[in-house]
Image (cartoon, rainbow, N blue to C red):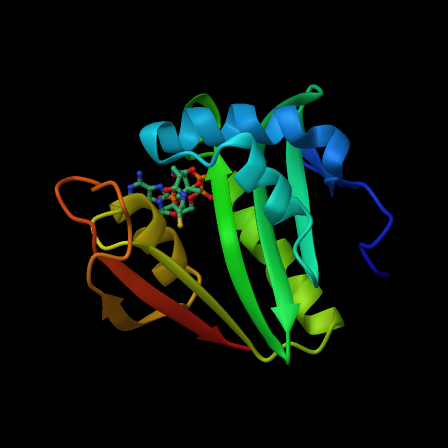
Length: 160
Ligand SMILES: CC(C)(COP(=O)(O)OP(=O)(O)OC[C@H]1O[C@@H](n2cnc3c(N)ncnc32)[C@H](O)[C@@H]1OP(=O)(O)O)[C@@H](O)C(=O)NCCC(=O)NCCS
């Protein structure tokens, strides 16, 4: 069954496709999860409208808890952003959102997933490595604002 039009109940919360009406919900998650690194409204809008893009919201009791945004092009998937509000972290939401990305890749025949994160973002790198991603490169000064003193990114990839 495809996820295009459906809402997926999970053991604790539900995942549904995001549209532009959800911009404020995404902004709340961005601001809380990324703080000074958060996308502004225009950047979120651009992300939600990306060609080939899909974004999904994880809600708990109708409250935004987390989201993921990605696009698939030429058989490759790029995760643009994933964030979980601090009070909902370490409950498996990040893992469920990334599993959904993989499911959509399988449905749309994408063969790999690529993403970047701060080289010192231990939480994110731990999540990705646990899911089978490998670090395939480092990008110097990738970000404008440092995280834990570094602006460098690591690029990770999972072959499907
Ligand atoms: C990265 C992030 C999305 C993870 O979401 P989450 O819902 O907390 O992740 P999960 O609960 O699914 O964690 C799955 C696994 O990832 C690893 N992990 C997650 N957070 C971790 C942390 N703070 N420290 C170490 N490992 C961590 C663990 O292996 C964890 O499994 P466990 O809880 O059984 O030990 C979340 O921490 C977040 O939103 N951070 C701020 C925004 C951000 O950095 N986004 C990624 C940018 S690329």
